[in-house]
Image (tube, rainbow, N blue to C red):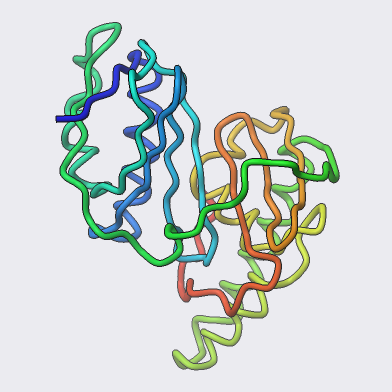
Length: 218
């Protein structure tokens, strides 16, 4: 069995991240890559983006790990995070087949730096987009709602990113602290938003947003 060692804070962060992913799709899978003293966790999001968190390990792994596992089962393995010891060994669930969006991950480098700012710079834009979405959808049929969703989340957001990338970051709690520093970057075929809590990747020529009716901004 493959296991990784995580500190309590890292376990708490991972459990919260997985909880949000499972809240969107209870059958969701995440792809985990560990090398040296760091583990990265990639997950799909219904807004047609790939989200990512990186966590320091309590002990380096002997061999690199690259596996796709059930997000729900991994969350269950972590268990009652309130009772975790300062460090715990987390045994990874058996591999599963993940979504197509996890088959080809964003490149590691080199990325061209873009705009820099703070979370508080973008949250008012997200709030305005969510408010406009809510105002347009209630009296509409499902087909019109999908059109409104595509127009809302594919609209320009900040730093060259579409609004759906910012909205996904907000829903995942990546923009909770207004003073948190954020930045964008680009590489051929990809754009990303970097925050202290995690990253959001979007393909430069991605198709229509898959998210339909998720108007909450928190």
